Length: 167
Image 1 (cartoon, helix red, strand yellow):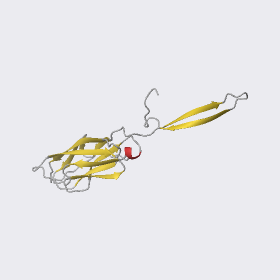
Image 2 (cartoon, rainbow, N blue to C red; image 1 turned 45 degrees about the vertical axis):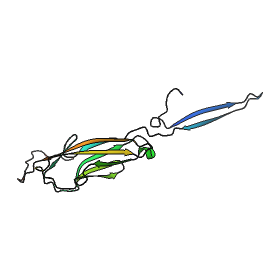
Image 3 (cartoon, one colour; image 1 turned 30 degrees about the vertical axis):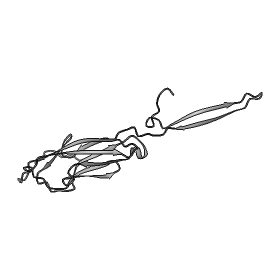
Image 4 (cartoon, rainbow, N blue to C red; image 1 turned 90 degrees about the vertical axis):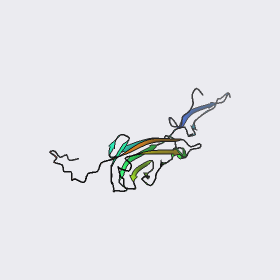
């Protein structure tokens, strides 16, 4: 072979075969040989985080936030491998009494708060998202998402929009 095969690029090769004997009245036959490429665990999980409130990679949460279970970020994890090699398990490394990461669909997770925050006590958290696939040997990836507590005001905020959009 001139180059390595990669299951993710092409998983099946169809090779046309022609067989012919050397007899006086030569006979021939045709068939197609299917060569199936076996997948190996050669791709790491890819983690994408979509922050609901804040900016890229930084979740902003109001101090005294009491809406436990509200989604703070969506996490999508993909692995190009197939079968068990492409299945991933993920979790948050660290303090599980403050945040949790729950799988809502295969490869889709959300991060929620499970406690109330006090900005004077602690104003920043770093969440390490760790994902590993079920291949042999398993491959893993991680990323960090920061959580910043913002001041909470008890004064009522009002808005006077001048335009409305229908979506």
